[in-house]
Image (cartoon, rainbow, N blue to C red):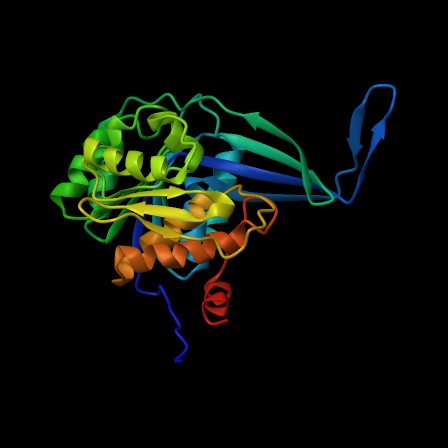
Length: 314
């Protein structure tokens, strides 16, 4: 059997969404104070990474794609750090700095490959100059083949319907990682990628496989989607398309050390594969392999194209 080697060097993907600075505070070990039942960790290493939509962009860059990211940040040190981190991995960033706003930051404290706690510093971005954001998107879209809208419900995509409408007029694939309980605002998208928990918040608890299949097809029709992909952690992922039978992609690994950021990996690989010319089914197949790799890592991790090709050819 001939080995398959894929590359995404010609993938052109625009990411628009909520930016977050992810900080990881690492301790080799921790101990408990019995009297207070309180863990104490000596922090030895601090690592800062792009989070939220920034992690999506990072995933695309790590697998070799060409990416630009548009979003909001605060006028602060954290915003400057995000810019530098993205520029360092050759991601073109076009940010709007908002006065009197702080860049969203999340700190995760880890020890012995476990997350002890997460500290969130966040307020929704208060921004009403949609015209400025819209202009940045218009000026960028003509150079890219796929648009990812990375929604973390932090305020960047407050006019998401208008962005979807614009991209549809330009015949660009629109991939959305959704949040919240209002999926109607995503109507008309090319692909929606909720995880199972997010999906069940919309369609109700699914107790068996056939319920997932039935309600998935109903949601595709209701929202006029070209496709819906429900990611299911160690159970793989399921693709729904109009007038087609659902396709299930079983996970390669049944061990999930940490699913943090796995959804970002999935949508990044699909976008890069579509922008390269692969079919949606092929793109989801590659994304499922990528997700199986990253859920075995701790924290919001990415993978590179060599890791993907190695597993593809085992």
